Length: 263
View 1 (cartoon, rainbow, N blue to C red):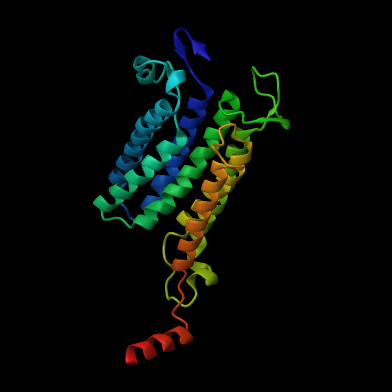
View 2: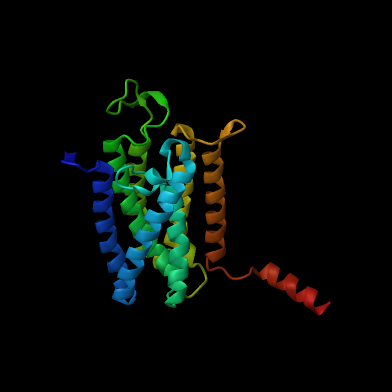
């Protein structure tokens, strides 16, 4: 929509709405953990700034030929474009450092970040559908975006659905992980961070799907590169979950270690 010289993009509107809702959940979860509220707001808005800067830099570097000039790269509003993946990775590193600086439990921050990010991604996917920013590969079963003559795989629709489902799963895990007997096992207290790692599994699954329907699938041999990245992420997160399950050493292993020490 254009109002005189000002252009308003549907993706920006939906992303802004998603960020406001994400801010509410971020603040609520941080308050429940008794984190300083001013620091929580500082962390959110600094994370947003980090996302915009690094996301823009990533977009320009990945699409430098289409951006054209340095002036276009700097003119964010006139020539919009963000690399969501680069921005999210940058924010993850920033929040890790921010939590360490404030002596906050990193896993608790990770859990809150996962819930907030999932809802923001869902709204970004809706904005992408309206914007037609990532239609995906040509497919007879897909959607016909505005301005296109052929149907394409609805990557943005998948992102929206994935964000909604991920939000529902991760928020539930964050609330109830202490009562999961398989996770708590023999430990007296379940460890924080299960929601973060479950969200990592969901991100890996997201890349498994996107690897086959995205037009930018970074093919490696016969497999899409994003598919391989998804497998790696799921493997790492699955391994970390298994390491955080509160099981003690098995009796057989304890006996073996004791015998080795005696010898």
